[in-house]
Image 1 (cartoon, rainbow over the protein chains, first blue to last red):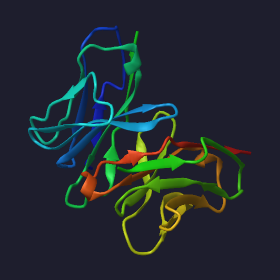
Image 2 (image 1 turned 45 degrees about the vertical axis):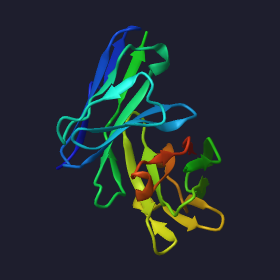
Image 3 (image 1 turned 180 degrees about the vertical axis):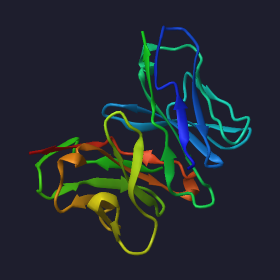
Length: 113
Length: 114
Protein backbone atom coordinates (compact mmCIF):
# COMPACT_ATOMS: atom_id res chain seq x y z
CA UNK A 1 0.00 0.00 0.00
CA UNK A 2 1.12 3.53 -0.72
CA UNK A 3 2.02 5.59 2.31
CA UNK A 4 3.72 8.72 3.58
CA UNK A 5 6.45 8.31 6.18
CA UNK A 6 8.04 10.86 8.46
CA UNK A 7 11.27 10.46 10.40
CA UNK A 8 12.22 10.77 13.12
CA UNK A 9 8.98 10.54 15.09
CA UNK A 10 10.53 12.38 18.02
CA UNK A 11 13.52 14.73 18.12
CA UNK A 12 15.11 16.84 20.83
CA UNK A 13 17.63 19.41 19.71
CA UNK A 14 19.42 22.44 21.10
CA UNK A 15 18.84 26.05 20.19
CA UNK A 16 20.91 27.11 17.22
CA UNK A 17 21.41 23.66 15.71
CA UNK A 18 20.36 22.78 12.19
CA UNK A 19 17.72 20.07 12.05
CA UNK A 20 16.26 18.19 9.10
CA UNK A 21 12.96 16.34 9.21
CA UNK A 22 12.38 13.73 6.54
CA UNK A 23 9.21 13.06 4.56
CA UNK A 24 8.91 10.23 2.04
CA UNK A 25 5.78 9.31 0.09
CA UNK A 26 5.08 6.39 -2.19
CA UNK A 27 1.83 7.77 -3.65
CA UNK A 28 3.76 9.33 -6.55
CA UNK A 29 2.01 12.62 -5.78
CA UNK A 30 3.40 15.83 -7.21
CA UNK A 31 1.96 17.99 -4.41
CA UNK A 32 3.71 17.88 -1.03
CA UNK A 33 3.17 20.08 2.03
CA UNK A 34 4.69 20.73 5.44
CA UNK A 35 2.49 21.90 8.31
CA UNK A 36 3.14 22.62 11.95
CA UNK A 37 0.53 21.95 14.61
CA UNK A 38 0.28 24.12 17.70
CA UNK A 39 -2.43 24.23 20.32
CA UNK A 40 -5.07 26.78 19.42
CA UNK A 41 -3.76 27.27 15.89
CA UNK A 42 -4.67 24.05 14.15
CA UNK A 43 -2.26 23.25 11.33
CA UNK A 44 -0.38 26.05 9.60
CA UNK A 45 1.37 25.72 6.28
CA UNK A 46 5.16 26.10 6.32
CA UNK A 47 6.29 25.22 2.78
CA UNK A 48 4.89 23.35 -0.17
CA UNK A 49 5.95 21.92 -3.52
CA UNK A 50 4.08 21.13 -6.72
CA UNK A 51 6.84 19.04 -8.24
CA UNK A 52 10.56 18.42 -8.58
CA UNK A 53 12.62 21.60 -8.17
CA UNK A 54 9.50 23.57 -7.16
CA UNK A 55 9.21 25.02 -3.65
CA UNK A 56 6.99 27.75 -2.21
CA UNK A 57 6.65 29.58 1.08
CA UNK A 58 3.59 29.11 3.20
CA UNK A 59 2.05 31.08 6.01
CA UNK A 60 4.82 30.47 8.58
CA UNK A 61 7.99 29.90 6.55
CA UNK A 62 10.51 32.03 8.46
CA UNK A 63 13.39 29.89 9.75
CA UNK A 64 12.51 26.90 7.57
CA UNK A 65 13.57 25.68 4.13
CA UNK A 66 12.73 22.75 1.85
CA UNK A 67 14.17 21.19 -1.26
CA UNK A 68 12.59 18.85 -3.81
CA UNK A 69 15.08 16.78 -5.77
CA UNK A 70 12.71 13.91 -6.54
CA UNK A 71 9.00 13.16 -6.43
CA UNK A 72 9.09 11.06 -3.27
CA UNK A 73 10.88 13.30 -0.78
CA UNK A 74 10.44 16.77 0.71
CA UNK A 75 12.84 17.27 3.64
CA UNK A 76 12.19 20.20 5.96
CA UNK A 77 15.25 21.99 7.39
CA UNK A 78 15.32 24.29 10.38
CA UNK A 79 18.36 26.43 9.70
CA UNK A 80 18.98 27.46 13.32
CA UNK A 81 16.48 25.90 15.69
CA UNK A 82 14.63 28.20 18.08
CA UNK A 83 12.40 27.40 21.05
CA UNK A 84 9.46 28.88 19.11
CA UNK A 85 9.87 26.02 16.65
CA UNK A 86 8.99 23.42 19.26
CA UNK A 87 5.94 21.85 17.65
CA UNK A 88 4.50 18.80 15.93
CA UNK A 89 5.29 18.75 12.22
CA UNK A 90 3.16 17.01 9.61
CA UNK A 91 3.96 16.22 6.03
CA UNK A 92 1.18 15.67 3.50
CA UNK A 93 0.83 14.87 -0.18
CA UNK A 94 -1.96 15.12 -2.73
CA UNK A 95 -2.64 14.33 -6.35
CA UNK A 96 -2.90 17.53 -8.41
CA UNK A 97 -5.15 15.88 -10.98
CA UNK A 98 -7.88 15.59 -8.35
CA UNK A 99 -6.57 18.29 -6.05
CA UNK A 100 -8.72 17.13 -3.25
CA UNK A 101 -7.77 14.68 -0.56
CA UNK A 102 -4.41 15.11 1.17
CA UNK A 103 -2.72 12.17 2.88
CA UNK A 104 -0.79 12.85 6.07
CA UNK A 105 2.22 11.32 7.75
CA UNK A 106 2.23 10.35 11.41
CA UNK A 107 4.00 13.52 12.47
CA UNK A 108 7.33 14.46 14.04
CA UNK A 109 7.37 15.91 17.53
CA UNK A 110 10.28 18.36 17.74
CA UNK A 111 11.46 19.87 21.00
CA UNK A 112 14.03 22.68 20.95
CA UNK A 113 15.78 23.17 24.30
CA UNK B 1 -7.91 34.38 0.85
CA UNK B 2 -9.60 31.58 2.70
CA UNK B 3 -10.11 31.11 6.43
CA UNK B 4 -11.85 28.62 8.70
CA UNK B 5 -13.40 29.15 12.12
CA UNK B 6 -14.26 26.25 14.35
CA UNK B 7 -16.64 27.68 16.89
CA UNK B 8 -15.92 25.33 19.79
CA UNK B 9 -12.50 24.42 21.09
CA UNK B 10 -13.87 21.54 23.17
CA UNK B 11 -17.14 19.64 23.10
CA UNK B 12 -17.94 17.25 25.95
CA UNK B 13 -20.74 14.78 25.33
CA UNK B 14 -22.04 11.58 26.87
CA UNK B 15 -21.80 8.29 25.05
CA UNK B 16 -24.73 7.57 22.70
CA UNK B 17 -25.74 11.24 22.61
CA UNK B 18 -25.80 13.20 19.34
CA UNK B 19 -23.08 15.73 18.60
CA UNK B 20 -22.52 18.65 16.25
CA UNK B 21 -19.13 20.25 15.65
CA UNK B 22 -19.43 23.65 14.04
CA UNK B 23 -17.35 25.04 11.21
CA UNK B 24 -17.66 28.32 9.31
CA UNK B 25 -15.47 29.39 6.43
CA UNK B 26 -14.80 32.45 4.35
CA UNK B 27 -13.63 32.50 0.77
CA UNK B 28 -13.96 34.63 -2.31
CA UNK B 29 -14.41 31.54 -4.48
CA UNK B 30 -16.29 28.27 -4.21
CA UNK B 31 -14.33 25.89 -2.06
CA UNK B 32 -13.81 22.26 -1.31
CA UNK B 33 -14.53 21.42 2.32
CA UNK B 34 -13.09 18.68 4.51
CA UNK B 35 -13.29 17.22 7.97
CA UNK B 36 -10.25 15.40 9.32
CA UNK B 37 -9.92 13.47 12.58
CA UNK B 38 -6.78 13.12 14.66
CA UNK B 39 -6.53 10.43 17.31
CA UNK B 40 -3.88 10.90 20.03
CA UNK B 41 -0.31 10.73 18.73
CA UNK B 42 -1.45 10.02 15.19
CA UNK B 43 -1.65 11.82 11.89
CA UNK B 44 -4.80 13.20 10.30
CA UNK B 45 -7.35 10.94 8.69
CA UNK B 46 -10.01 12.13 6.27
CA UNK B 47 -13.55 11.77 7.62
CA UNK B 48 -15.44 13.25 4.70
CA UNK B 49 -15.27 15.87 1.96
CA UNK B 50 -17.55 18.12 -0.05
CA UNK B 51 -16.50 18.90 -3.59
CA UNK B 52 -19.83 19.58 -5.31
CA UNK B 53 -23.32 18.17 -5.70
CA UNK B 54 -25.43 17.02 -2.76
CA UNK B 55 -25.00 19.26 0.24
CA UNK B 56 -25.29 16.36 2.68
CA UNK B 57 -22.08 14.38 2.76
CA UNK B 58 -21.65 11.07 4.52
CA UNK B 59 -18.29 9.93 5.81
CA UNK B 60 -16.65 7.17 7.75
CA UNK B 61 -17.58 6.05 11.27
CA UNK B 62 -21.17 7.29 10.96
CA UNK B 63 -20.30 10.98 10.58
CA UNK B 64 -22.02 13.33 8.17
CA UNK B 65 -21.77 17.02 7.34
CA UNK B 66 -23.99 19.51 5.61
CA UNK B 67 -22.72 22.24 3.33
CA UNK B 68 -24.68 25.46 3.67
CA UNK B 69 -23.52 28.01 1.13
CA UNK B 70 -25.71 30.87 2.37
CA UNK B 71 -24.39 30.50 5.91
CA UNK B 72 -20.88 29.50 4.76
CA UNK B 73 -20.98 26.58 7.14
CA UNK B 74 -19.99 22.93 7.07
CA UNK B 75 -21.06 21.46 10.41
CA UNK B 76 -20.16 17.89 11.33
CA UNK B 77 -22.76 15.66 12.99
CA UNK B 78 -23.13 12.20 14.42
CA UNK B 79 -26.43 10.90 15.81
CA UNK B 80 -24.87 8.69 18.50
CA UNK B 81 -21.24 8.93 19.61
CA UNK B 82 -19.00 6.26 21.07
CA UNK B 83 -16.09 6.48 23.46
CA UNK B 84 -13.83 5.69 20.51
CA UNK B 85 -14.87 8.96 18.82
CA UNK B 86 -12.84 10.91 21.38
CA UNK B 87 -10.35 12.79 19.22
CA UNK B 88 -9.58 16.19 17.74
CA UNK B 89 -11.50 17.19 14.63
CA UNK B 90 -10.31 19.67 12.06
CA UNK B 91 -12.33 21.48 9.43
CA UNK B 92 -10.40 22.56 6.33
CA UNK B 93 -10.94 24.28 3.00
CA UNK B 94 -9.06 24.27 -0.26
CA UNK B 95 -9.54 25.06 -3.91
CA UNK B 96 -7.58 24.50 -7.08
CA UNK B 97 -7.47 28.26 -7.57
CA UNK B 98 -5.44 28.44 -4.35
CA UNK B 99 -3.13 25.63 -5.36
CA UNK B 100 -4.96 22.92 -3.43
CA UNK B 101 -3.42 24.10 -0.19
CA UNK B 102 -5.49 23.10 2.81
CA UNK B 103 -6.38 25.88 5.25
CA UNK B 104 -7.32 24.47 8.65
CA UNK B 105 -9.43 25.62 11.53
CA UNK B 106 -8.01 25.56 15.06
CA UNK B 107 -9.59 22.21 15.82
CA UNK B 108 -12.33 20.92 18.16
CA UNK B 109 -11.58 18.34 20.81
CA UNK B 110 -14.49 15.95 21.18
CA UNK B 111 -14.55 14.27 24.61
CA UNK B 112 -17.02 11.41 24.90
CA UNK B 113 -17.85 10.46 28.48
CA UNK B 114 -19.39 7.24 29.72
